[in-house]
Amino acid sequence: MTTHQRNFPSIDPAKLERLGETAVKVGLRLQPGQDLFLTAPVAALPLARAIVAEAYKAGAGLVTPILADEEITLARFRFGPDASFDRAPGWLYDGVAKAFGANTARLAIVGEDPMLLANEDPAKVARASKANSIAYQPALEKIAGFDINWNLVAYPTDSWAKRVFPGETDDVAVGRLAEAIFSASRVDNDDPVAAWTSHNAALGRRTEWLNARKFHALHYSGPGTDLTIGLADGHEWQGGAATAKNGITCNPNIPTEEVFTTPHARRVDGHVVSTKPLSYQGSLIDGIAVRFEAGRIVEAKAARGEDVLKKVLDSDDGARRLGEVALVPHSSPIASSGLLFFNTLFDENAASHIALGQAYSTCLKNGDQLTPEELADKGANESLIHVDWMIGSSEIDLDGITATGSVEPLMRKGEWV
Image (cartoon, rainbow, N blue to C red; front, side, top):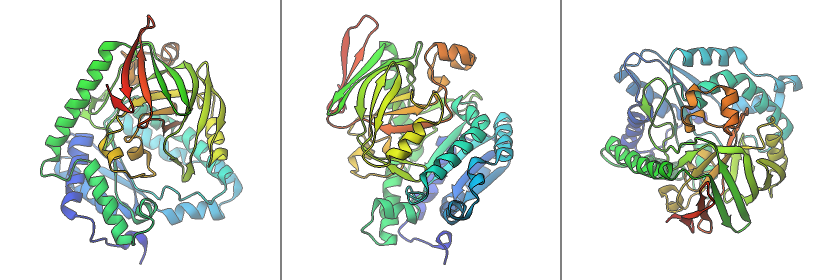
C-alpha cells in the first residue's frame, strides 16, 4: 500500500472537516465565482478533498489542484541528469502568475517530510532551489505584493509526523501531530470562525499599539545575541487577518501568532543566534550564528547544515539582508505545546523571528503604490528568497528605540511588557 492510500483512524474526521472549512472561510474568504489554485502533498488528499468541497460550496468558479509526491521528488535527485538541476518549469509558473493576475486565489497545504532531501547532494538541492525561485518569481511577486487572497494550512502526513514523534508508531505519531495542528489552527472547538474572529481582533490591537509608537529600531539582547534592527521608513505592523489588493480580507497563515513588519535592509547591526532549528528545502540548519554590518551578514556559521546556509546566503545580492521582522511571545500556544514541528509555518509562530530576503511591500505605508526604486529607498529588501528563522526565546529581551534615541521595553524574557 502506498503512503497516500493509507488511512489513519487517529485523525478526527470532524476536526479535519472543520480545518477544511476554516481554510476556505477564514484563510481565504473565497468569493463566489473566484477560481482557486491548490497545491498539496499526495499524502494530504483527505484535507485537499475537504477543501475542494468547501470551496465549491462557497461558490468557487474552478478549483485546480496540483499534487506532489515524495518518491517522485527523490527520483529526480537520484536519477536526474546534472543539467536538470539548473532548470525549473517556467511555463507552469508563468501560467500560475497569469492565473493570479486574473484574481485566482492561492492555497497551499504543507506537510512534506521536513528532512526529505537531507541525504541528497546539497549542491543539487541549492541549484534546484535557485532555479525554482527564479522561475517562480513572476508568481511570487503577486503573493509578496498581496495582490490576491492566499492561505497556508497543514496536514499531518505520516512522514512529517514521524519526524516530530520519532518514538511512536505511525498511527500514534499521526494522531498526535493531527491534534497539535487542530489545536494550533483553532479548529478543536465547535466554532472555529468565531475563535479566529477573536484572535484576529487581539492581533489587530497589538499592531495598532506598535504602529502608534512608530519605533525607529528594535534591539534584541540575550545569550549570544546583541542585535539592532532598524525599521524601514514608513513601516507598518501587521498581524492576523489583512486585506489583499483585490479587496478580500483573509488570513494568509493558519496558524498565526505573529505581528510583523519590514526592517530597513541597510540598518541592521550586531550578532544573533537561532533559538530553533530551521528546516529548509528538505535539510535541517541548526545553531545558526551570524553577524550583521550595515544590514548585511558578513559572518555566518551553523552547527549543522552550514553548507546549506551559505548556499542560501549566496542566492543573490539580497539574500544576506533582512526582509521581515516578526514578534511572537514565548507563551504562544505553539511554543507552549513544547513541540518542535520542523516546519516554518508552525515553528515561526513559537518564537520571534527574522527573515532573510524579500520584503513585503504591504508592510510599508502606501507600499502598493511605490515603485521598486522607491521601496528600496525606504529600506525594503529585494531577493529571490524569503527564509524565516527563529531568534526568540524565554531568555531574550526586546526594546523599541525611537527616532530620538529613547528606549521603551517591549519584551522581557520573551513576553510582552
